[in-house]
Amino acid sequence: MKNYKNPFTVSEKFGVVILILVASLGAGFVGGYYSNGNNPDSQSRETQQQIVSNESNLIAQIAKDVGPSVVSVNVTSTGVSNTLFGAQQFSQKSAGTGFIVSEDGVIVTNRHVIPDKTDNISVTLSDGTELEDVSVIGRTGASDPLDIAFLKVNDKKGKDLKAAKLGDSSKVNVGDKVIAIGNALGQFQNTVTAGIISGYGRNIEAGDGSGSGSETLQNLFQTDTAINQGNSGGPLVNIKGEVIAVNTAVAGGGAENIGFAIPISDISGLVKSVLETGELLRPYLGVRYVSLTDDYAYQFNLDTKRGAYLAPVQGGSPIIKDSPADKAGLQEKDIIVKVDGTEINERNSLASALGRYSVGDKVQLNVVRGGNDMNIEVTIEAAKSE
Image (cartoon, helix red, strand yellow):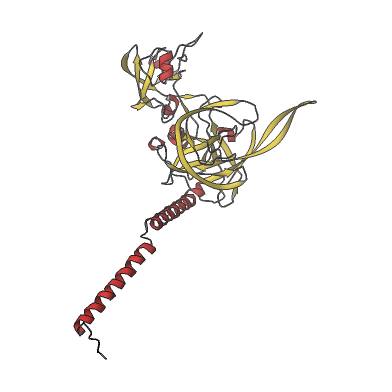
């Protein structure tokens, strides 16, 4: 029998073992690399899960931070119905939302949350405490494009009230993430929904669904955040936890995910006046105007395509007599293109730009008159409120 001669020496055997071991470890590493998250598909899923988790945590934290500033507004009012026996009065209850803007109990809500013939108002805090001694500071007029009212808690029952932090709605962009907090359907307190800003500069005709009338609202944010009955007057909040709008309306007629909110900067002048004076003093210029678009500019044969056009009024004037505009010398066919440097366009109507100022403020209007630019200083006065 022939003996088989091993072709490897001891040292060579050791080298082979080392190579095999290294090769085995390498194979294990490569297998682990692809099976433990470095597979592109697996890594993508984990990244998505982390994003969802982070977003959920962020929304939860915002709700926790802002929630104590949000209140349910409970209203008892007198209604009237026409029957065979004539007009009959009856008591009715409704609910909406508001948010606290000062520690002493000033609350912002919508005008339509507080009906004309309101008999009693109470607010419920996020912890369930009901504060019953609440009065109306003021409401904007029925024809005012700002659907806003202010309330005051007169007896806090020893509770510490947390004011919401107000943001700058002029910095909001389409696609920004937002969160709505409100008393959904008038019974589910501090409901939280999330979405994005879908558009801005929206003008709508809004009603309460009763057929009793409608109101024109201007310069609204559009959002796909779920806004339901009872959410009215609640805050729309950015990811910093700042209020950037007041939830106001939802599209009807079978539309889905279309809600509207008043930009907070449009009422900053009102908030300032209420906090400083205790009164609702609505900034007033005293003009009737058309917000120019390409179509309106073509219709009126104007070279200027954006601004507030003081269009001729049949049988009257676009300048209200003895108004601040009249006193400042504004004229028919003037086009107001800027207010203190803020351009009047799809994003900023004249009414919304003026809403950022308080009564008594002096503002510079950049006006186009007969093709020429000119500056006119106007002192803002107070409009009559209801």
